Image 1: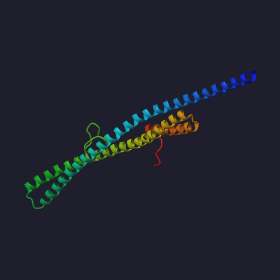
Image 2: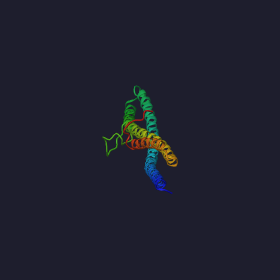
Image 3: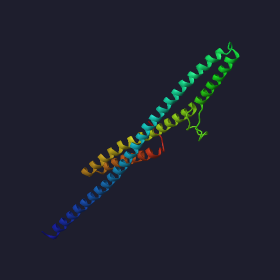
Image 4: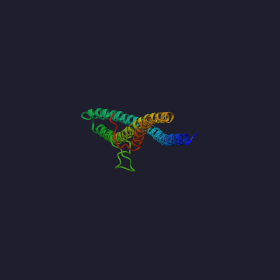
Length: 209
């Protein structure tokens, strides 16, 4: 082997070594990116689970509160019918009977008013506390609003999970193929998934669909 052959061999070895080092750097960077995306996916999964729980609980509470409201409404309607019947008897009633009828009418009227508006004695100005129809409606609507927020969060977490799962698959393929373009695509999907995960917690913007 002459000096030229030795120089060529050394150059080839250096090039091969440089190629291995570049591949190792690529693999390390891709592995780090995959690890970060996996961590974001785990956090998003926790947030999605909490959002689902909030959605279910709020829906149950809203349904139960509306059922209570309807029960109050039915009882109130029954008293209103009874008051109308008692009032129809007033014109022909004797004085003693008339006084008794008026007392019952006043009692039923008070019950009707209580069914309509019965705030909590400990917090009379809080519309979300109490058992009157007015308070029950406010409570049910508050539960529905909480449910809608939870639904919006859950939608973000679901989409984030899909984007991150695809990003992880593409990242793994990029390592196997040592393909930078695939890794870039993985990074883009991972960034979208991370943004949706953040939006799932904070609801910074509404989804366009």
